[in-house]
Amino acid sequence: MRSTAWSQTESPHLSPDDIAELIERGPDAGAGGPSIRHLSRCEVCMAHYSESVRDLAEWTTAVVPFEDLGLRERRSQPSRGWWAGALVAAGFLIVAGGLQLTRSRPPAPSPAAASVLELASARDLVIPGGEAGAASDLISYRSGPDDRRAVERVVDDLREAYERGPRTSNSLYELSASLVATGRTHLAEDYIAEARALDAADPRFLVLDAILARQNGDTTAAVNLLREARRRAPRDATVALDLGMVLSDAGLSSEATALLREVMRRAPGSPLAARADRVLKEPSGR
Image 1: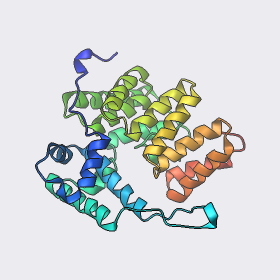
Image 2: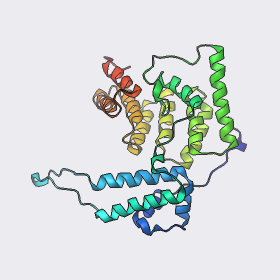
Image 3: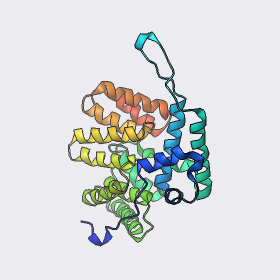
Image 4: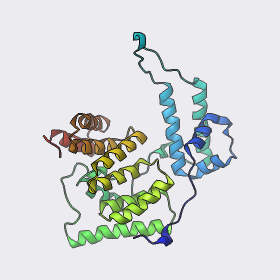
């Protein structure tokens, strides 16, 4: 079990209401408020803010069909100036905090961590960050004592680095995912619980929880966790692929097929698309 001496907490993240208020106030948010100061320092909150602004811009230009009276109408939208102001505010905050809007997508894991995640992703559900292994033939990192020790050293190094600090959401994810990938379930559960307490909205940790639920034989929990991850990250091909594979195994072939085909559209030519194609071609599950 994890030592209680390591169970330290980080400063809390902004709530969804705080982020919504910043967007609503737009350029009038000001540079000196505590929420803005926190946003400029916290990559997790900045990612959520950036994604909210992007989703708002997409929503205001969406056309939604209405079936009543056979009419097709445009959804009632906020004024263009309102959401444009939010985008201006986003640019202001990014400059003020020295951050970039593109950081809404988590950075790729370190090469050492990625190699561990890729090996695990070749065996079952794809772990975010290990997508390159999705198309590989089923292999095991336990091919020999030397390989096993090398992988374990990588995980131990990630754990030591995280506990030594700085403790970021990305270093916590790399550690948690690597523990899941190597079957160190109890430690993985501890770190995932810590991550979910700090940032329940991060879909990467929902995927890790789903993988653990699947390993424990709880398909219902795995499906529910992946559905929530998809709600949080509707454009993420990895989440769509994992949910499609779990649903395929559960016999829900129609929904699974739609998700797998979506992966092939979103990420053509990628390892994720290759895995989706392979699952689609298998006659009865994987």
